[in-house]
Each structure stands twice: as structure tokens, then as C-alpha cells.
Amino acid sequence: MNEVRCASYADDDLVAWVLGDMAGGDECALAEHLSECPTCRDRTAEYRRLEQSATACRKGDVIRWRRFESPFGEMRIAASRRGLVELSWQTPSDGAFVERLEARYGASPVVCDCDDLVPAQRQLLEYFERRRRAFDVPVDLGGLTEFQRSVLQAARGLGFGEVATYADIARRIGRPNASRAVGNALGSNPVAIVVPCHRVVRSDGTLGGYTGGLEYKEALLGIEGRSDLLGPPGLF
Amino acid sequence: MDAIRAEATRSTVDHEVPVDEWAALYGDELERHVTRMLGNPDEARDIVQELWITALRATPDYGEGSNIRAWLYRVATHRTLDVLSGRKRRNALLGARTTELEPDRLPAPDDGFRGLSEEGAELVRRRVAALPCRQRDAVWLRWIEGKDYQTIADRLGGTQEAARANVYQGLKKLRRELAGVWNGGELR
View (cartoon, each protein chain N blue to C red):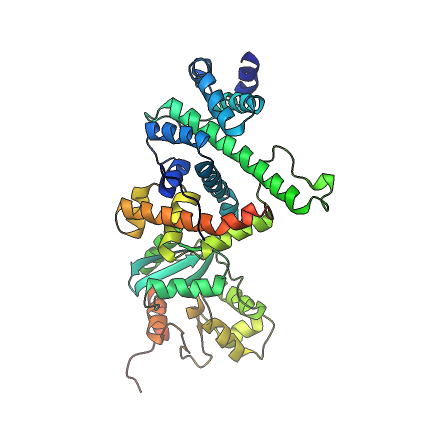
């Protein structure tokens, strides 16, 4: 694609002008040039149009993400405009995390967060420091099946330090025979900790599984003062 | 000018903007400037009149030592470019489907591109989503959220210059990709 170029100004100048990055004097000179040069005028009008579509972009959905240090290691969280969609301390890199979000949320731009997710980060760190018992951040479970959503909503009903069995949850959502499916749904929880799937354990008193690794489930229940569930080590 | 001021002050906060002074100083040259672009002195006069209203209503972001002449030129030129784009799009539409267009489907003469249709907005968002990661981050923070380059550099790592380069690269790529669609007159 060969586009006509102007000898006086490069595209960078036109972008700078539209964004208001230019010094006053240069800005006037370029404005005057635009009245004489149809090539630059057309091109600048396109940048201007692009600049104006920012408003429309601002309205649509976007996935923000950020990384921070936590007692579990590097933690990454992501949110749509409706709430948290991901929390992970096991993704190996920013790139891998972003790729997964892109694959999952397709058309929405996935961009790094500047400050929107700071409250979520702060609350998580307060929780780890045992200074917080409940999270006051919205969660967006829109990408899940209705069954998964109902299981995770039921888990959200469990308070700090409160535990239920897989069978309890199955009964609460009106599917008393679906304990195994409940386990699977909890295993697919994309927003661990905030949606407290670690508070669901087996009927025989053992902890059951945890997608993030059983040691983390133990750690979380420990934070919530439920060391009684962990059992004395090496008893049997 | 009194009528303009009366209309504008209805929604103004009480900062005194010496619009009359500016009109006396820069009015003629701005009108000539806009006329050179539009080729129509009447339309140019309208745009410059609108400019004084904008100046009265604007919370002056032309402050901070920036020069007022540059601000007036920027706003007048932006508006003129909008009018030109609207004109161009109408011509493209008319040229492409003269025979099928019904009169009530013609874009209004002054609609510029103030509004972007749903699918137009979706198209832009998809293109932004498809930008390389660093450009996408930088473009979003600067262009959508209006963050300054130092903030972007702090957030993404690297220098202000690198942040700015990523913003510019991203916007140039977006323009290249979208210009074809826009100039085809199919979306607005």
C-alpha cells in the first residue's frame, strides 16, 4: 500500500498535534500547514476521527489486569467492567496470563491496569495479613455455565472461617445428588480466595482437592483460624 | 458577541474569559485560516463563531502557560477537519450509491462524526484489542484514559520516550487499518 507522503511533516507530527503533545508555536505552524496541504489535512482528519472514537471505546468492555507480590508468590488479577474475572498465583508470566485472557475474552481489549484494581489488590493483601475477613469487590462470573455460577454463588455465601461440605453445597443449589459436579465446578473457580471455594471440604472431614494446590487450601483455612480442620500432622 | 456571551454564560462558571479581546486579535486570521481549508467563507465564519462559544464554555485547559493562539488554532482546525470528514463521507456515500439512497438516509449536513455507530465503535475496539501488547497498553492509557507519558512509563517500565513511541506506533497502525473502511463510507 503506497500512501502519499508530505515532505514537511511526518505522521508522528500529525499524531502529536492531534494528541496535543506539541509545543504552542509548532502547533500553530502545523495548523497553518494543514490549510495548505491536502495530504496532511486528510491524514490529520483520520487521526482526529480516531481520536474521537476514544469515547466509544471507553464505553465498551475492557479487561484490565495487574500483578503484585503476595505471600503466595506473584499474584495476577483481572477484571471486566463488571468485576473480577481472574485471580491466579500460578501463571508463570505476564505474557501467559494476558494470552489466556485474550483467548477467553476475544474481542475486548486486554490492557494493563493503572489504578482501577488497586482496591482489590489492597483487600487481598489485608486478608493475607489477617486484617480483613470479607471482600468488598464485585466478581464477574459471566463466562461460566449456569451450574458453575450457582455453585460459586453458594460458596460466596460462606463467611470467613465457615466451612461446608460438597454435599451441603449440592443441597443448597437444589441438586442433592450432584456432589461430584459441585467439586468440579469449584475446581473451575476463576477467582479463588475472593470466591472462597477453599471453604468447601469433604463430608469425611478431609479437605478434598484444590486446583491451586492443597497446601494453599490449608494455608487459607489457617489464615481463617481453622487449623482444627487440618489435623495433627503425621497422626496416621 | 453579546448574544453569544449571553447564551454561553448560562452554563459557564464564573471565570472571566476575555473572548472579545481574542476575537479582535485573532478573529480575522482564524477565519482566513478556516476559509483556506473549507473554501467557503460563510462556513468558516460559523466555525469561528462556534469557537468563541467553546472558549467561553471550556474549563480552560488552554492554561498552564500554553499560548492561547495555539489553542484557538487547534480547536478551530479540529472542528474544520471534522466538517471536511463529514463532507468526504457524504460524497463517498453519494458516489457509491446515488441510485439507492433515499433522502432520509442521507447523513445530516453537519453531523461530522460526532457519533459513532455501534458497529463503528466495535470495529475500533476490535482493532485496539488486536494491537501488540505494549502498544495496546500504551495507546489505552494515553488515548482512552488520558494518562501522561511519565505515568505510562512508570506503569509499563521504560522511558517516557519509549512510552510515547508505543502510543504513536499504535495509533499509526490503527489509522492505517481503519482508514480504508472509513473512506469507503460504509461505517460511521
